[in-house]
Length: 314
Image (spheres, helix red, strand yellow):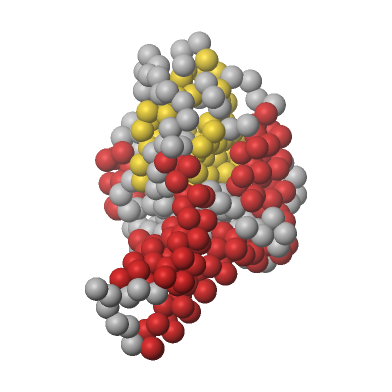
C-alpha cells in the first residue's frame, strides 16, 4: 500500500535529490578548481538527504525517484564507509600516550571552558593553533604540570603552542617559505624512538590564491614529513576534509596514515552545528605509530571541537 504524495511535495523531493546529486558530482572536481572543493566536504549531509528522499519515494511507489536517490546515495557512501573499515590489526605498544589537539579560535575568551576541556582530556601532549597572547596569559598558570613548553602566539590566527609532560629535545616554528604559515615542530625521545610532533594551520581556501597557498603548504609539509627520521605525528586544522583532493594528495605524498581510519569520521567543525559538522581537524601518523583510540573532545568555546588521540609506538 503506497502513500499518496501531494504534487508540491513530489516537486520538492525531486529538487532535493537534484541538488544533492549535482553537489555530489561537483565534489569530485575539487582538484580542478577551489570552488568545486566546497562541494566535496558535505558527503554525509548529501547521503542523509538522499536516504530520506529514497525512503519517501519508495513508500509512495515512485520508483524512478527512488532509483536516482539510491544511485547517488551509494556514490556518497562509497566515499564515506571506507573510513570506517579496519585496515590493519591494532597492536598495543609498551605505553599509551595521549595527544590533545585543538584549534582554540583566535577570538575565543571562554578560558575556563578551554581549561576544563584540556584537564578532562589529561593528555601527555597539548598542541594548540590560533593561539594569541591573551590565551597564554590565562592558560600558562593552569598548565603548570606541563613543564616542557613552546609557544608562538600571533595576533591573527596562526599562533602555535605545545605543552608536554615529556621532555622535549627541541621545539621550533618553521616557515617552509613565504607562502606558508608557521609549522610547529617538536622532537622528543619516547623510549628508544625519536618522535616528531608537527602542528600546522594553513590558510583557509577562501579564494583561489589562498587555496593555492594551502595546497602549496600541504605539499611542502609532505616533503618535510618524508625527510624526518623516526616516527612522526602531524596534527592540524588542515582546512580540508577527508574527501578533498588536497587532503588525499597530502596522504599520498607524505605516506602518512589517517588516525580516524576504522574509527569513523568524527567531524569537528562547526562545533555549534552538528548537522553541518565536517571533519577538517586531522591527526596523521607514520606506520610505526599505532592508534589505540580517537575521539572529539568536549567543547572549548571555539568553533572547532578538539581531537584526542591515544597512541603507542611499536
